[in-house]
Image (cartoon, rainbow, N blue to C red; front, side, top):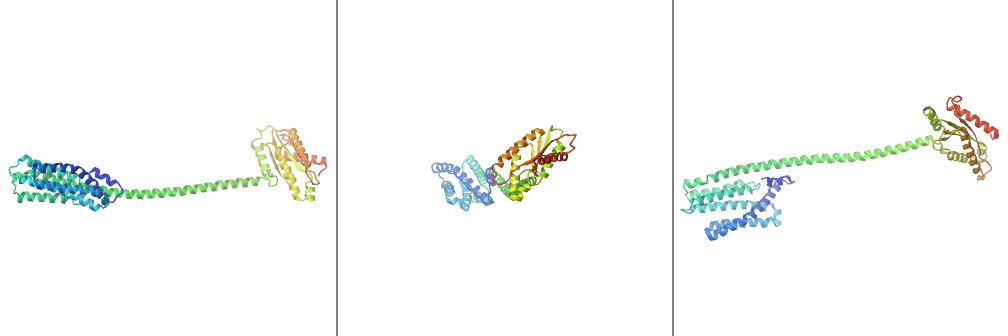
Length: 402
């Protein structure tokens, strides 16, 4: 029974399970039964010599052989034939043993032990039919009809006495038990099948929900990726915009707002940590003259060149920016005023080299003033810038380049 129940776990409808069980059990019974029946047929031919026994065994052998041929041919896909021959195998077995019983009990003065052996054979065949019955719907009639024929023949044709009739008490009880067990087995099979089917349906529904959840999860992941990508793009754009808002477009230096914000934060949070702070205020000489005589485009070129030169001469930790039309400011950290002026001299030298390759009739020059922070003189950044602006003005006035 457990062997047959293994088929229930596969995804088949109930007819497929029953038919497949008939195919398997019928094959197994035929493979076992044919050699055994051939052996007993040989005995019947040369020992017992009772024609009805030989014919009954031959019918069963032929039925089993036909079933095997069908079960290994293309007809095995036609389960209708498989089921019919499964019925016929079981029917021929029970009919065979019923005919044996009738034949043995028809012989007068036969030994009682032979009769008992025949009755035991009947019980054995009934048990075998039960074990290889699968889940055939009409198994009940397979058991009842041949035995009814047998009992009718024994009682009404052979007129056996009560003493002989009592020998069939055990087969009768076994028959009732087998039918009850078969009824229970089939009900259990149907219960298991429909429970399995219900579980499969629930599993499919659950799997469908899982698939939908996975699909939604994938869509959600895609949306998250798109959202993350969009956020990153926005962050990059914001950084670009912020950078653009802090950068002077003409010179690519910090603009006035960004430069003052950086320096004021340094004054506010890091002033005590920094030993020396120096700033240089720079003004481009005669920029108005260049704009008026050579055009604002040329003036922009001059501002760009000066911004580039200033940037090349400061360190990464220093800050330089354009704070007005022709004004620049450099913040030096841990550099004294004297060293800052040396840097400004190198900047002037670079400007002079640049003037040698200018083809137009003007010269680039700058005026500057450098101031080192002194806590007694300068209260804040504005005081330093004012002082540096005064020094720049003095420098410019000394050159008379205003």
